[in-house]
Each structure stands twice: as structure tokens, then as C-alpha cells.
Image (cartoon, one colour):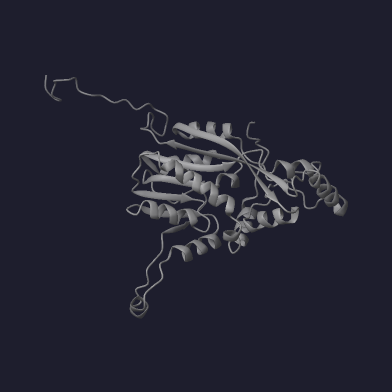
Amino acid sequence: MAIDPDFRLDAPRLRQRFSRAAETYDNADMLAREISRRMEERLDYIRLTPRRILDVGCGTGSDLMRLSQRYPDASCFGADISRAMLMQARRRSTPKSSLLQRLTGRIANGLPLLTADGNALPVRHASISLVWSNLMLPALHDPLPALQEAHRVLETGGLLMFSSFGPDTLRELRSVLPTHAGERVHRFIDMHDIGDALVKAGFSDPVMDMEMLTLTYADLDTLFEDLRATGGNNAACSRPRGLSGRHGWLQAREAYEKLRRDGRLPVSVEVIQGHAWKATAKTVADGRAIMQFHPRSGSTPGKD
């Protein structure tokens, strides 16, 4: 499934929805926490001692705190498009100050946080050892610019680790909603398109896999509440502003009810996980090849 150039996400609306969700996100992010746990398990099999870690799309900071605990000697930074999310992350990461600190005004600071778009990171070139991105890619209609930025800020030998949702996510909901008036369910990028974007961005040896998870809900309203609470509701530029009136809603609900099994409504989630390395560059920025010359064995440079 190729990336559709006509499909666009409304970036200001996304930022607004994530900001509104900042207060409720931690109560509804069970899926993100589970995916984070699975991502961290992969680190057990990867030899890496990062000096600097950047969590892109850090949200309220749960992953950032876990990474700082896993790698206590590393400098950890978080970046997110929503300042409201970062305020929650600041509260989470700032140590409680002692009475002496409060009296002297020496209040401990939390982890460094950046209000930034993943497509334009205010981070120096080749300064990061590990770029971590848990479910940031679904907020993009094209992953390539963000992956290029991740490649730019990584040092040679640095690692990108990420997760995303695939096209079959929310497929039940997509199947019951009318399609004649525009995008009614958020569209997600196919794993193979992400893989192609990783190669174009310059990454080496990308490794990805996909698995299907099925969540269950007692009713459709609870699903919608969770989507709103995490800022995950539809933000396509082509989204309709209504659902064909009350009749359209009733039809959608009735169609979804037919999918009920064992008293619960199924919700499919296609989880994509992957990692890739930044290898030694073979070309410079203008495309010219880098050629390395090594002295012959036994010879001394500068002498015949």
C-alpha cells in the first residue's frame, strides 16, 4: 500500500487534540504502555550503551522516565508537539524537593524537554545515541521527514527504535462507518512503506515486525472515550464534519453490534515495531561518494 499523496493530516488539529488530552492521557494509555514494554524487551538483546537519548513524541513522559532508569548514566531528553503534554512530563520527571532545597531556592530540575515537531528537531547533528519513538509515527501522513531528522541527529552507530500502528488498526470501526463523505477513521501507514522510508532516510539494516492485537470493549462509547482521552481520534484534513445525521450513527452502531463476541466488541490493533542503525556515511550531503584511503601494510605515510 503506497503512501497516498492526497491524504493529509491536520497538524494544528492534532496539536490541539493532544493538548486537550494531556490531563486524561495517563488514565487511558494502557495500549501505549504495553507497546512500550515490548519495545524495551528488545533492548535486552541489543548491545548499546547510549550517552544521549531522545524520546520523540514523549507525551506525558512515561517512556522517558523508564529510559532514564534503564540507562542512569545517559542524558535523556524528551520532545513533543504539545506543550500541555510536556507540562505533564515535567511534573512526572521533576524530583520532589526537600525542605532545605525549598528554603534555599535550589529546586531540582526534571529531564530536559523540547516543544518540537518530529520533522524539525532543535537538536545538533550526530549528537544522540538512541532515538526512541513510541507511537509518534501515526501522527504523520508521511514518515520520511521525521525519519530523516532521526537519522540526522543520531551519531554514527546510533540506534532508532520505534513503534507505530498499521492499516488494519480500527478496521471494525472503519467497516461500519459510511465512506461517501471522506475519511472517518484515522489512516495508518503500512509497514512496508515505513521500511522504504527508513532506507531512503539512510538507515542501515532495518528490522521490523507486525502483530495483531485485539482489544475488547463493553460498548462503542467507551472506545470513543479512550480515543478522545489519548488524542487518537480522526484528524484527517478530509474528515467529514458530521455522520449523516442520527440515522447514520444508528446504522453504524447496529452494524458494530453484529460483531459482538462473548458480550464484548472487538477492536483490532495492528502494531508495528522496528529498529534501525545509522551506519557510516557513504556519501556527503550533495550526493558525492566518500572514498577512504588506507596505507598499504608495512608502509609509512609520506615516505617512499
